Image 1 (cartoon, rainbow, N blue to C red):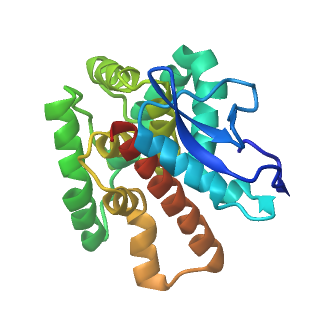
Image 2: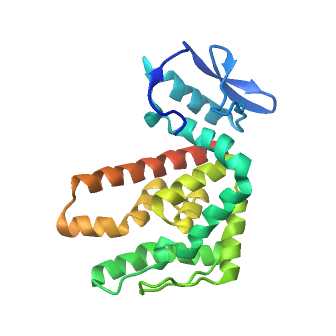
Image 3: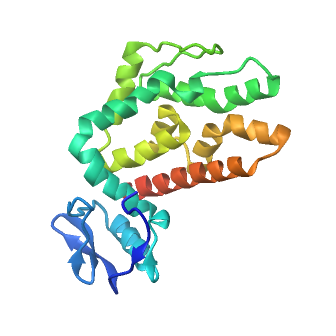
Length: 237
């Protein structure tokens, strides 16, 4: 998160403005910058307007917890961009232990649900990304074909710095590179990504009920996925 806590609002107006070949956000006429002082250069007016609305919606204090777009943009500028190669490698490594490659042998209802929700995503990765991944029901690590992992790394590399920050948020929230890439490509919507990521937990809740801690965790996962999905969509608009 870009701020350690709430701070007093220090501006009156936030607006989207043109800047060079793109757009930015100005607070009382001053261009918004990241915590590391990087200027915000945004590719779409829609994203700039949504970001300006996020800042305009703050009341007496600025609450980072409700500023998903700002957080993702700052992450892209101050964390992803200075260490892009490392960020790509770190994210691509999720393919080695992708959530949707690890299946159960029972109960039958969960086996069927995994196949119905996860297998189409693996089929998509094989056909569209040239990344066929192996599936296992063992607790041991399932080695994946090097060519498939290389293909997944190329798919990650295709994202620019801003999109990479959005993709990273989905992958880390879901535990699955394939789910993240599928959402980024429009193969999944936010609800579909959440369903795939939380398949096991949803089954447990349906069987045994939900604990408050589980509810909080799932709410955080949903919020991360929805925020990143909106961010990625605004980048393309």
